[in-house]
Image 1 (cartoon, rainbow over the protein chains, first blue to last red):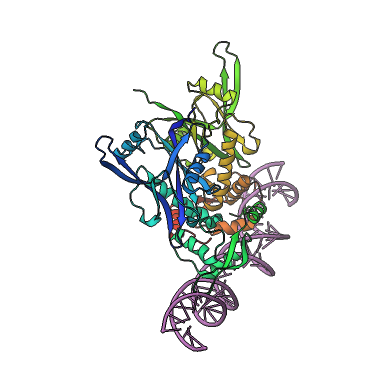
Image 2: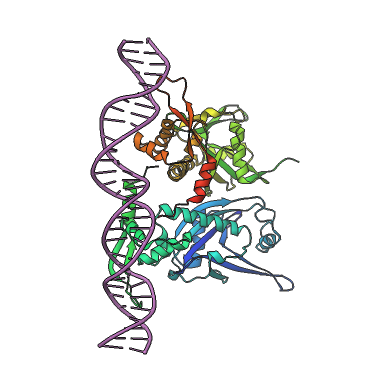
Length: 245
Length: 245
DNA sequence: ATACTTAGTGTTGTTTTTACACTTTTGATT
DNA sequence: AATCAAAAGTGTAAAAACAACACTAAGTAT
């Protein structure tokens, strides 16, 4: 009994990473060869998406995509928007892609957009033999389907969400320095922040725990390392859902 | 040529209103009679949702539901989450509903959740002869399908969103008093706010314009009326996307 | 005239924000 | 051993925002 694939529902995961310098997004190269001539007919880039099995919740499908890619479970993952425009897959190349995977090119395919944050150095990437690579968000070119739109919305969501929720450390190693943390905010917002004010602000966040450890192997004064404590965060969040408008 | 309905895609609109006292949500009573005996077999309540036409963007479908209900165009409307669990419509009553509208009860039906804010006194409600009524959110009982879950998520989204975006006046008449505005926040959050601090805070919001008008027909000191200026808001929003974490 | 009801207002102490520049600590180089 | 390079780490003062708190004003109803 093989598992049935939904013919009209898919998930796309906008997988954000951080290389110490820029915000990156995971891009898949997809090539399609003509079945007869073997000639290359399409060479497109896309976000990492996938089908959903008929009996599979969409959150599970998104997690499956992430697990297949990164080998990681428990990656930060959040649904942000659903894309269902009737013409979203009606460009000629889109239609070829659908046909090549046995889909009905007339069907209205709905995709639920998730975004995800991973520490790029935590993972060894692989995906079904396809070439996947990190691309700085600012250098992403034209993507197939409506994936440029999806990326744009995901980025907007991320930029807003980090104002109110401490999720940026998901892009960093478990132990990180305050400068690294500041760099993440700067990379996501594309602006510079004041170092002293930034540090005063994070000093108030009880869930950022200073360790008795320092950076090693750097050719300058080594920075102190910090970890994020989910326990402390959950506790303070429960105490204080900030109601002031 | 009749317009085709999508067999697997729907929208649900969580329509929030405010009665001057409590936050309310629009609920539809649905009854189903046995085709043979005419006997009432189901009497369920649901949120206001509908099918999506095959050639219709989901935003249009959601706006159509709102227009059919309220006669209003340009109502505040925002997509907040998509519900696609494979078992979301597998309860016995859900299956009866699907059959009664000619749907395949086996199909996996995806619903995109929108929420919407309307000033209840702006609208005369009607919906295809069905009984629709405002119910205080705190008094909503068991709903059919997964609509209790959808309502819960919509409310959570609303509670969060009003912290950062001025959308509360959508629940009020065009001209409103500061007390009314404060009451809306209190109703949505279920807490009380300090009147003086609240007024100091809104005084800083340049997009709340004080009119040279006062309330009439009240048996006490009449309050000044205010309007929301979208122009001013859009301008200040562009100037200041608040980057501080 | 009086009572009732909601509108509207100010102060003080505390916390947060913003703007801004120099010293410290390490490894690398000579 | 001395110097250099590079990033870490730190404080202050003025302005703004926040939090707690109670009385007077202005209109209708009787």
